Image (cartoon, rainbow, N blue to C red; front, side, top):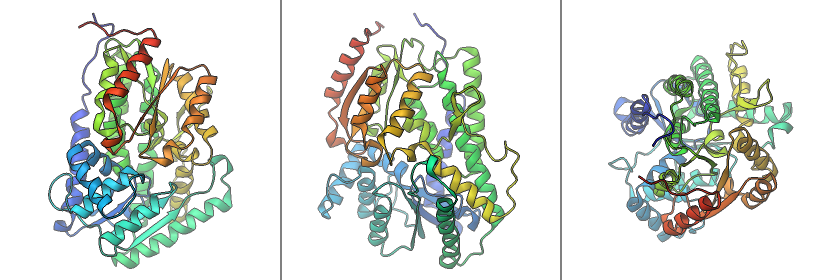
Length: 434
């Protein structure tokens, strides 16, 4: 018998439509006389927005995750890259993306749509090199990359902020030169407002999962956070996240659960093995669900300490009554906002990541932690063994499993399921009889 009432998300279909339209709009941009640009999910997408309403992006990591989900196509992409002589231990997102270009196949159908320019930033060791190769494979696409490696947010000062903003200003001049378009500061300002609103709202959605029972499970959250990795600067995404926040808040007030038999709350880490998301459904057979992770919460969500000492959504410029009136202010807010991103902090020290993970584990009332030793992403998996030790010292049971977010050849599903079963049994859980 179910402990809690459950029901589907009312806005689920809208989320699917926004994602589908994003990839269709990019593919068909040239038919409308628009521009296409490619770059990472962490790139400053609000800046190209100043070129006009008909500018469409293809962010690399979520596109590569879509390739990874299609295991048959992914294998063809990975093998095509290996035949070109690239090493198999490189970022698997990067290899899936490159393979799609080499095969000239778009995972959503048709030929791979070539971008007009590349707009990237560099925090992970692969970021700039990823798109340098893309430029070469596509015959020399113009590329601009912003270095954002300024150290932890607690050490950001005026000089470091000026360093990033100066590159942004250079980037706008570069965009005007290569597109032959006049830049519109008002469109930039609106995009910055949208980005701050959408990323703060996503964090607010995640805080609602502190509720018991959790209104969302992480497998579903993967399909929701991804919108922010596509175009967090857009009005469409900001408005959708406000609608999602309102619906999830209503679910908590009415006691609507993601899992009707929730008895155990887990936390994961880093990208999941995209071709094997059913492992999250396997947890439900024991009454367990993942409430999220630093990855799901902090990849796009923006956080800060709340008045009660808890971790919650960062206040936006709008909420603080700040009016952005010019380009310089917009760029400084955009740079400073992004430099506080949780998932950027632990590139500098595993201790910073451990502190955030332990905070989540405590505030979201986690019973155990599942760590993915992800060979596909050196950046987000860096220091994960130290994170494991810190979590154990903090009193949380931890299981680890090896895999790869984007290369199915490095994921042993049966072995992982066996490890999960043993871990849950050690937490005194048994499979729920149907």
